[in-house]
Length: 139
Image (cartoon, rainbow, N blue to C red; front, side, top):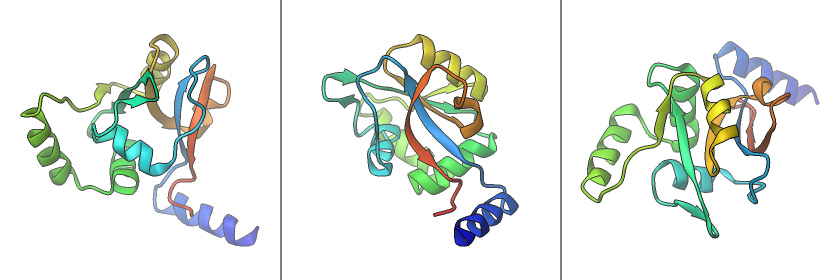
């Protein structure tokens, strides 16, 4: 317990925050692991079974997006840009950018198959299913 508390405090000091990946509450999908999330956000996976997924991401300057790219996708901004330039020639597009975490929640609640990451506290009272929880680097 003490170790978890120390890790959480360390994450807060470093600016890392807890986030969750969410989907509409009536979706058949109930959980995703980090590798699956990475594949979805890199365009390697577009379906979970027969269920089409539409990943959403925050704006490039959003600290949560920067944390997500660094810790979950394991890519720098430059490497990610190069990745999507190459994928563009294969007819693929990067995840849709939305203006705020509130917009991510609204989009997820309205569009079947939309998935997006938001700060943990925002999902507590939202009508969404949490597919993945990340403790802000405190692992």
